[in-house]
Length: 114
Length: 126
Image (cartoon, rainbow over all chains, first blue to last red; front, side):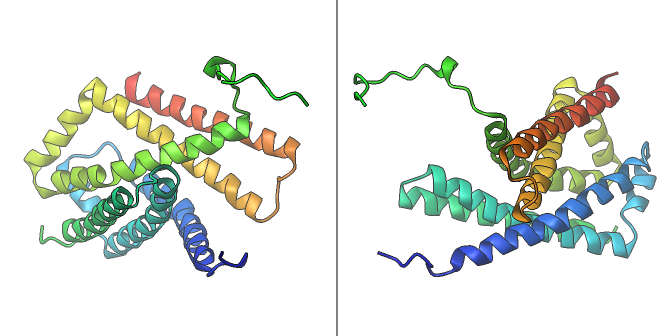
């Protein structure tokens, strides 16, 4: 049996979830507000909205924090409901591919030459 | 105590989850929904920023009532997840952990998520 103190692997993920939660709670409403006050927009205005470098950096950092946050959350959910080890590992992989794919895709979208 | 007669049949209609329990399970459900929405959101942004035709496709798609309903669901998920998450963070800091305040704050979270959703529904459908 493991000791009650465990291997402390849970403390790290707990902290990642909390720290990323604080970042998201501040950044996402701010970004939503930035877009909402600018609406309605035509195509040129929409492109101009995402042109500032600081905004693109902020968006990418926010979505990176979101990926970490979602990883811990989805891992918790899968640990609770999927007892079959093989299936759970396959789903972990699907979650990681989805999150890493979304972050890199967003980077490509934000830095593609317009 | 006499053991209950077996088998025991659970009547789902008679099981009542307490308010903090609803907040908790909906925090999970909304989190999973938001995870699924992330690639969709990046896809929509990619299409809308690529060229004028893509922007128009997204605008036309979002004009459909079903798309607006899906968007409304995501707005609820985001609002509930954020409010329930702030509640969790407060409880981590030992704030509001007694039963009475835990019930009150879970009511506020459910109400707040509902109000944001109503406001968004009014903007999307009225």
